[in-house]
Amino acid sequence: MSDPSERADELGRNLAALRERIGKACAAAGREPSSVSLLAVTKTVPAADVATLLDLGLHAFGENRAQEAAAKVDDVAALRPDAGPRWHFVGGLQRNKVKQVVPWVYRVESVDSPRLARALDTAVGRAREEGTRDAPLPVLLQYSVDGDPERGGVPDGGLLELADLVAELPGLELAGLMAVAPLGTDTERAFAAIAGAAERLRERHPDAVELSAGMSGDLETAVGHGSTVVRVGTALVGDRPLASE
Image (cartoon, rainbow, N blue to C red; front, side, top):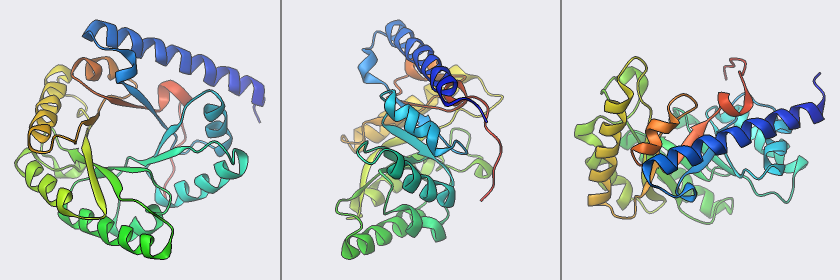
């Protein structure tokens, strides 16, 4: 078992390096560093690491497995009862897992179909009746750059139709767009396409201002194309073991 103080030092160094990268990317793009927030992707990361990151000043954490995340939410609450972390769901979400996620999630960043949107809306309504949630659920639409159904995401032709649906559902709040630049593609072209989709979304729904794009290896390019949230795992917490639910 690693020394907790050594791990805290490692996470602190990684976080400082990341903040420096974000600051330089913002400067290169003529943006304020405060215009880009950091979402720490903590899938397969132990609750103790999340507690340390809270101590270091981070507040937003991304999970992509409903069962693992639900247990971690409870564990972190026990370790830091007054910290108030904001948990984001950033992976593909199955409709049969929606009920597990809605009571604790701050935002779902992977809505890519009308069926998932309606399932979330129904679950939010039930949670409000049961007293486990008292506000609409902010969501981001997951945009598919290349339209590949294997990777998830709504293709360009369906984006605004899905946005209109989400905007009408009383349990949901349309907050913006999330996207991943596909591996093996030109990142400049991919993030330009993502930025264009985000602009079209804002034109139709002016309050949908968030753009969650960019990860450990490409956050600079994403910031240059208007990302407001970068989702970083490896560059912050190191390599993580693979896990399945």
